[in-house]
Length: 176
Image (cartoon, rainbow, N blue to C red):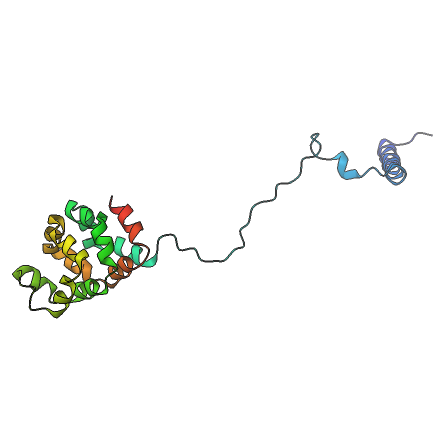
């Protein structure tokens, strides 16, 4: 009797499948080891996923507001401004609330233009501060104080917040 080829092929495949099943049960050989790469011990990489949802403030919102201000960008190119911001006198004076109040005063530009500060009570209070006197003697400060862009930036609350905060050092590094 002649067995047809398709039937013979099915019988051979069935015998192989039964043989593999028997080997797996008796030896414990998993079929997954017979597939894939010949390199043993290689596993799928675990991708790094950060799950931390804490907000990190790299520089500070107020610094970002200042950096996006066109007038501040122009001031950063002014050597007088960079010299003033970088001075120790300015850093000390920035901690003085009287100075910050004076910069917020709308009359500051009139005072600077006229040169007559004596009429302003905030200025009289500030003039008793030796740190302010040191800064006022600085020619860079006097030049930058006349700059309308500086007066506008000085009135900007973001500038006051940066100057009062620990971010003044960041601002000083940026203008260098």
